[in-house]
Length: 280
Image 1 (tube, rainbow, N blue to C red):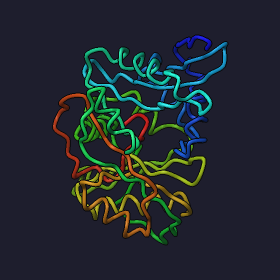
Image 2 (image 1 turned 45 degrees about the horizontal axis):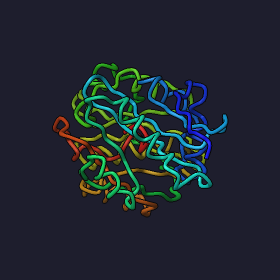
Image 3 (image 1 turned 90 degrees about the vertical axis):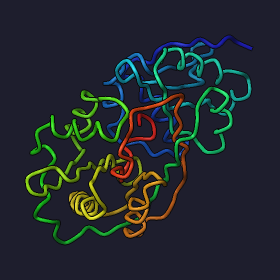
Image 4 (image 1 turned 180 degrees about the vertical axis):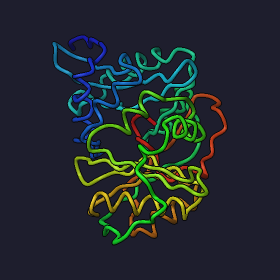
């Protein structure tokens, strides 16, 4: 058996992992590669045999306390030979002493536990075809009208680390559309929608309550003209689940949100849509 050589993916090579994720049915966004490279350019890995990519993984470091693992894929002809464990270990080593999070397939939970991950809750992807609303709420504005510092501070209530550079890119990337709801002059809800290989995904979607989340969702759907849409919601947020079901969306698949250690307290009740299963 030829030896596996592990190296960093260069930013322009991250499309390898994203294309493999698409082949696995994960339905990445059309502009994900450029955004994903921003928080940690050294956080993407490829394993090669005789120059041929056979395995990928990412472990993106956010600051000095938190990292998020994703894109853990071994091409089918090369599975069962230990390549996955080797590239996994390289990713874990990159995180150092940071707490690591991931959204793993449910069937692999036991393997993740062996690496020190503990289940926090399930995330469920809902999908379906929706109709664009005729008239969004007048209280909804374009997200870029909100000072970035306000959005960044709000994001810090629902994500375990500051991710300023990534968040700014996620908001400003061409094709991504953001909307926000103001109540009495303060930010009550905000979210983004982006085109994917199939349909569109909404994420993140952050809101004080279901009504605020719904107002932003309707505005986002209006901007996209309706069609097939996906929304990833924490199963432990009943209002988020109810909103997805109200939209007529059905469960597509489930992931296990897991961590290797304690994270800052998060307002999961305000998470109505996860940003990305790959980067958290």
